[in-house]
Structure formats: C-alpha cells, structure tokens
Amino acid sequence: MGAAVLAATSHAAHIFPRRAVARMAAVPHTDDASRKDRPMYSAITRSINILVEPTYLEDQSEPDQDYYVWAYHVTIENRGDETVRLRSRYWKITDAMGHVHEVRGPGVVGEQPLLRPGEKFEYTSGTPLGAPSGIMFGNYEMETDHGETFEVDIPAFSLDSPYAKRMLH
Image (tube, rainbow, N blue to C red; front, side, top):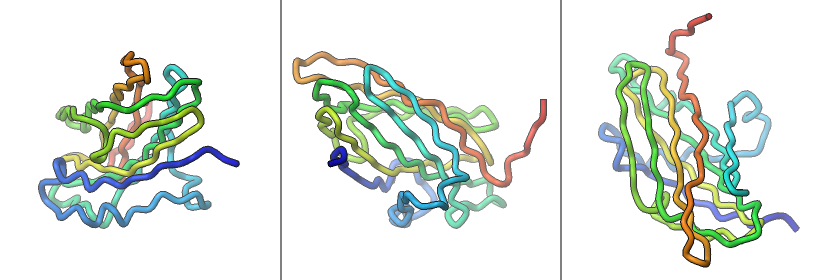
C-alpha cells in the first residue's frame, strides 16, 4: 500500500489583492501527461522532501496591467523515522524588477499538518507578481513529537510566464 496523502487547496486571499481567489481552487494537481513539460523543484532536509510545481495562470493574469499570477503545488513527504508537524512557513518572493515580498505565518493553507513516517501532505496556493517572471524560496518550521524544532528548505523555483524576456548568456 502506498503512503498516505493528505491534501488541501489554498485560496491565498492575503496575497491576491485584485481578483476573487475562489478560482484558484479550480487549478487541480494532476498526474497525467500534461504535467510533463512543467518544471518541478525539490529539496530534502532531514528526510523531509519538498517538491514544488509552479504553473502560470494565463486566465487570471492581466499582462497589459503588469499583473501575472502563478499557482504552485507543494508536496511535503516525510521520508524519516519520526513524526513531525509543520508549524510555520516563510516565503521570499522576488519579481524580475527586484521587488521583494516576504510571507510568514502559522502552518500552510490554514493547517498545521502532522506527518507520520511515510506520509505526504499536498496543497496548492498561488502568488501574483507585477512582472512577468520571478523566483520564490523559503522554509517550513517543523516540530518533532519530542518538541524539537528544525527548518526544512523549500527549494528556489522559477516563476516564468510566456511574457518573460529570455536572456542568453
């Protein structure tokens, strides 16, 4: 039998000032062939694997008004021997113009998931930018059953829209 998977979807209302975010929930995470061209980013810290898959949302973006929106699907997998709880998150979001937005808060999508060995937690959230590309990274604070806390890296991942200028080196 496979690992247990818990799932949640965020409406990320705190970071979507222009639009009703209810449509964010309409961005499903699928395991089909349509995902093959999407980049995936991963990092492992202390046997906690973080996998991130960003997706540009054309239908929620307004490029003529410098408003670009991405969803990102995160899988948190406990590959270790101890049970951990995700207590808080930190994100640093930088757009192509150098504007930085930092997000800190308890849990993710209103939850502080408990992950036993072999379990996964998945959620989808999103972010808007005022430029056609950017980058995100951060960390989660985890806590063991014994009260020990530690940080788990969220890998840096690229937010690229079709409107981003490509530069060759």
